[in-house]
Image: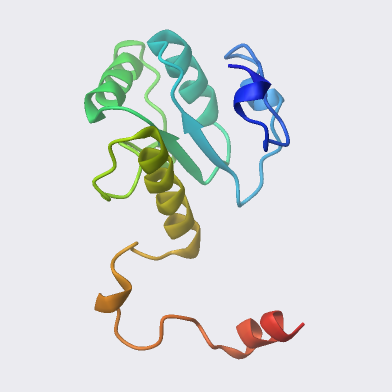
Length: 144
């Protein structure tokens, strides 16, 4: 990974699996997306991430990859808490029919946005009522 590939990034982190969670700031709006193409590294990072309070952890790649990771936890006798595992999304992304890297990125970001907005990510044309929340607190945020 090269910072040149991510010119708009505010931070590009290089870290050993054991140090990843020590190098990031975690809040209630943190999302982690995992896929390095190195299964052993990804398993080690996921094992660390699931022990944090990160509300959204996504794994890029096939569903079987995460199933293999869960089996590795069982085999090692270290199955994480089911509530912690429920924060893991795999495979990651909304079902947009994405094929290209740009389309896959859009599907992933769309799922993360839908997650934090607590929305299903469906078609707006199928949504009953207004598409925007017009509560008093929201209107104040717009006016302020």
